[in-house]
Length: 359
Image: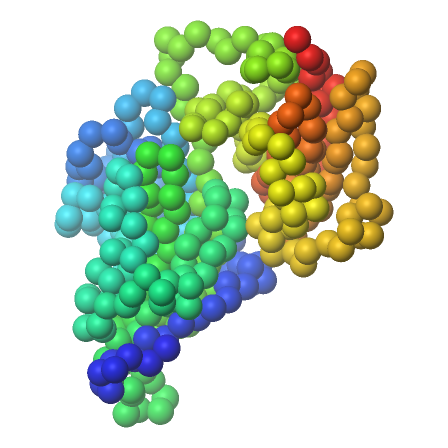
């Protein structure tokens, strides 16, 4: 996209290749917690056995019940002190020529004004003019990853480089992840050539992000059998219940990394094929035709209930899902996460479906 100001240009990188993730070196896993109160500066640890220089020095404390965030830091990134008191992660990377890029991870309540406001704030930081709502589809790339659907942008500001071998303009590679009550921002800023070279590492970093729930110690154990509307079901013993949010009738963490949900909509919610193809898009797979869907689906009869089951994987993420029409509504049972974890949990997923009864 070219803006009216001739000296300013916006570079859009439209594809995020998860194949780049596989080429990165194995990195240490790190864990942090989301505080509900105002963020405070991290404190460096000097105790014996403290994390090494390429890891965050101290976990960020969270209120009881807040989810923990985990990520793997690329080996060439170095942790740096957070001078702002707001960052959950702060890193720097340099090349042999001394060019530098910084990486910041922050979290804020709500959506912080929405996608347009956040992109225009970043554009202003690199002296580019704001865009309009109509431009968003050309600027944002949605990327389904382990933690959810990230929105990702690649922005370059300033005059075209005079040096054909090195682009010294300022570049922002950014991604954000919206959750029910907060938004996470992942932002790399620095020398354009260096940021471009670090794109595979950045993509690997956000692909590694995942969350686990930290339940309050005093919270009562969730009942094994749950009734919702006209249906009841029993979750497998190893499934960890988590926040239902505004739409879910059931919500669990499965096998440590995978997410299970049950939601319902009136009527057929657009039809089985449309919903299955929406899920396939979440793992970067092409849509099925009616014939392909008919060949791939399985039918599971549980008493008078008939579940339509699909199972597919793309980009290292697997979805096993079932659709149940009942009492004028469509119920969607969906298990999504790392391929191996979801595949291993399929017998438990089927057991969950077989536990569903009518009241």
